[in-house]
Image (cartoon, rainbow, N blue to C red):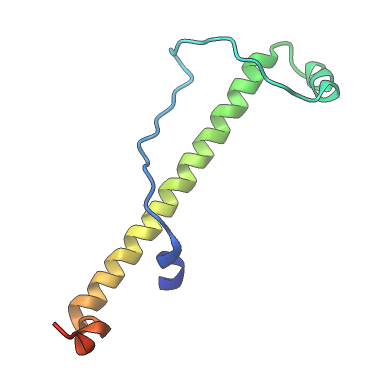
Amino acid sequence: MRTICALLCRESLEMETSTTSTRKRPVNLTMNESLVTQAKAFTNNLSATMESLLAEFVAAQQSALRNRQEVADACAADWNAVHASIGSFADEHSTL
C-alpha cells in the first residue's frame, strides 16, 4: 500500500457542482449525428438528459478524487507513524 501511496499526488477536492438553481447558458457540442438521432428516440429533452449524465460523471469524478485523497492521507499517516517509531533511514548517513 505504501508504494501506491507514494505515487499519489495531492489534488484539490474543493470542486462543488449543483445542477439545481444554477444559471444555464447555451453550449455548443460536437457529437455523432447518428447517436444524437438515436438518443432523440428515447428522450424529448436532449439537453436535460445530457445535463443529467454530465452531473453523474462529475459526481463520480469528485468521488474518485476524494477516495484518492483519503488513500494518500492514510499513506502519509502510516509513513509518519513509521518515521516516529524508527526514524529515517538517512539519519545514519547524514554528514551534517
